[in-house]
Image (cartoon, rainbow, N blue to C red; front, top):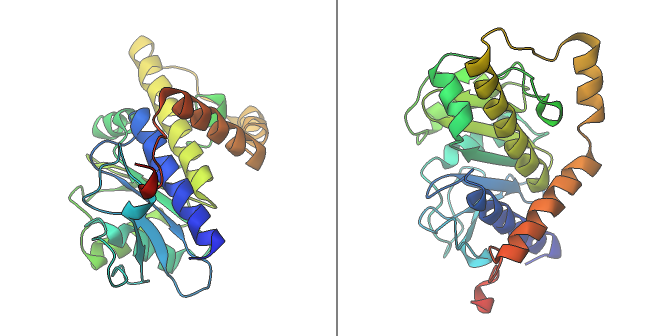
Length: 241
């Protein structure tokens, strides 16, 4: 195994453990990252593995069509979310599919996500995919990828979210603050349906100053350190258990 693949596996396992700790993943949900080489292969957490105790041995190497390499465990049934987005979006290096509470509530209420919180101000123009069942067929995966288009996220109404980015760290940070923005939007709506939304030049500058690779890394380190302190990152490698 290359050093790059080993590093990607470890980041993926950390991200899933950290997202489970803050209730952005439960028994379901998955994260993937591309493998360097240009052949379309990617890593993803195994379908049957617990998100709370995932180890690097529970990460599956899949071919571009979603089939696991020989001897690997079974990937999630919604692996086609990943295959079709990677196929249509060569710029995407990592994907997360989860079932965040506040975003899903807003979708059920037919309230589009709006930028209301500084570090979550990228939450605008997020399209909806209206087929709420499992995306467990290639054709549905392609439909979802087309609904995503060139955006960083798509909401599956009544179901969850799909987020894309340049790295596992970036999709992790995006997931954290997209949900925080949705929570604040929901609570503001309860207080005042005509609540304030970031807009115009203020929105543009807020987006520009509140999102960068340095901020992504800061978010990652913060959650990594909290998870280390709490013990949620114990035994990441299978031989450490």
